[in-house]
Amino acid sequence: MKKIIKLSLLAAMAATLSIAGTLEDVKKAGVLKCGVNTSLPGFSEADSKGNWRGLDVDYCKALAAMVLGDSSKVKYVPLNAKERFTALQSGEIDVLSRNTTNTETRDAALGINFTGVMYYDGQGFMVPKALGVKSAKELNGATVCIQAGTTTELNLADYFRSNNMKYKAITFDTNDQVNKAFESGRCDVVTTDASGLYAQKSKMKNPDDYVILPEIISKEPLAPAVRHGDDQWFDIAKWARNALLTAEEKGVTSTNIDQVKATTNDPEVRRLLGLEGDMCKNLGLDKECFYRAIKQVGNYGEIFERNVGENTPLKIKRGLNALWTQGGIQYSPPFR
Image 1: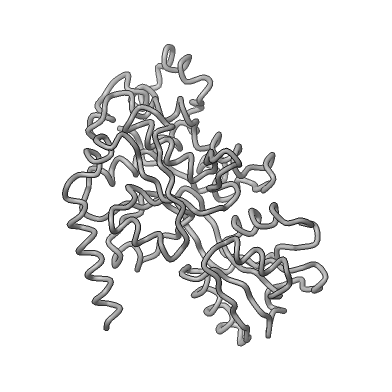
Image 2: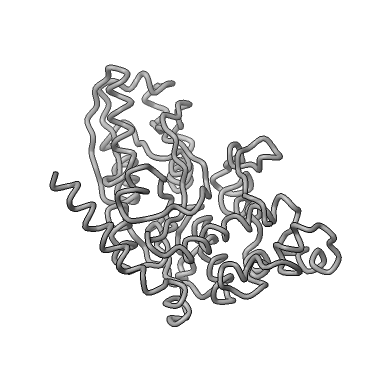
């Protein structure tokens, strides 16, 4: 009962904070406050000079390009799993773009709205090759390293329970703590989203000494989120993602966009790029809002390939994250 009351109070607080209008707040501040992972290669991490990069980071850049005209006008706020929702609810950040799974409880009880899936994922397991394990079904009695405050904990419990297996969990607050504990041998197994396992493996001293098991035990639709109560900001954040997908579907890239803009007769592309219709105006922005996002950051395919694709250390195939026209399930509503 206490937990339900607490969640309700948080939701009410979030709705109240949103009334002022996030778009106006962002414009007044001149910067978009984006909550990201503290360090997750391919999704959000800072280099030695403090420059942030990753798939989740690029979403925020696209949103800033739409709203502020400049993809560099982003303040990145590193958050661990426990901090992320409070930071969004309290107004510390304007958008949460932190490899966060859209679930019913989070969407309905925490006072937040998920904008659309940026990466379809699923939870997996990684073990040392020396352990000789070929399947997650062989993990009975294992010690498992996990990050606290995530759906990972719940999925792990469900999986072991449904398969009549036991385990011992060792929880940590951050990814880095999990990774160090696993690599030092404190646990037999590490479990998180498969994308996170690829990222973790890429950072290890001897990545070939570890293997990711074949089982995927959950659905993890990773999506940015905003606060309840501000429909305009929700629409802006949602259609930023849709613009990136539609641009890829239509073959519009950061390098050819000006040529396309000058020559295209495709009605949907013309609406996307502000040549006709009121797409951006409907959101309260100027007519070239989507053009700037694509020009400055790239389409969804460009973002995917440079951050997590097969030519990166993560070497992730598009899979479910391919466009619906190419065997995947990534899909945008029409620009009409």
